[in-house]
Image 1 (cartoon, rainbow, N blue to C red):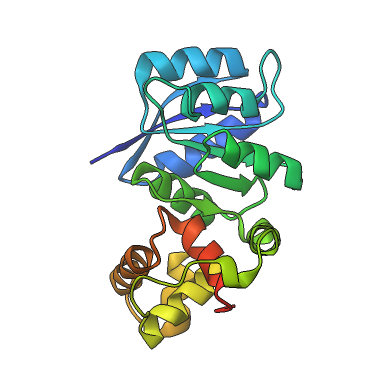
Image 2: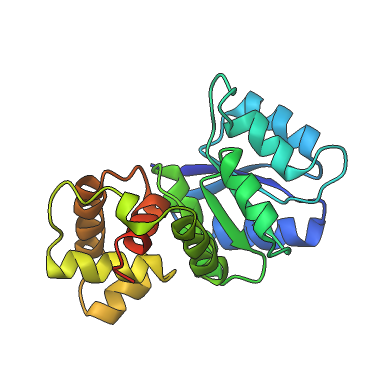
Length: 216
């Protein structure tokens, strides 16, 4: 299945770079571009892409408000949104996730991370740039005392604990596979089992549970 992507950024050179990176993948196709948030929302609602890759600072309507309209709790038919931004600010990360984004990457991230963020969003998973993941999750874990965090529904195996700990440190699935000398499908299986056992809805919540339970 081809992942259909909408790009929204006010810089045409960045849109061209994103298009080149994403269109180079056999399972990803860029189906539309927008230079402002208002156009992005209109095109997304018209085309119903699998993933919307949005910048934050755009004219007319910023990417955070566009995310709220496309993926927030009031969206009638929510879409998958990944934020790509130059600005590594906690306020932006929290607002993006609160508004329904399922991914947050920085524009200087590697092409591999950008591609993985799009693929993760397409299947309902979440990926946050490693440079902000640890800080964000430490903040999430620090908001409640560790004893309040519910224990896993089932104990994690030692290898599942290894995978979860690495995810909580911001490693991608490919990096986890390389570190543990296992296949990518094995990592995905361990992560899916851990998500079920921890009662987590996505990758971000798996990582948050790891911080709450002292696995990191």
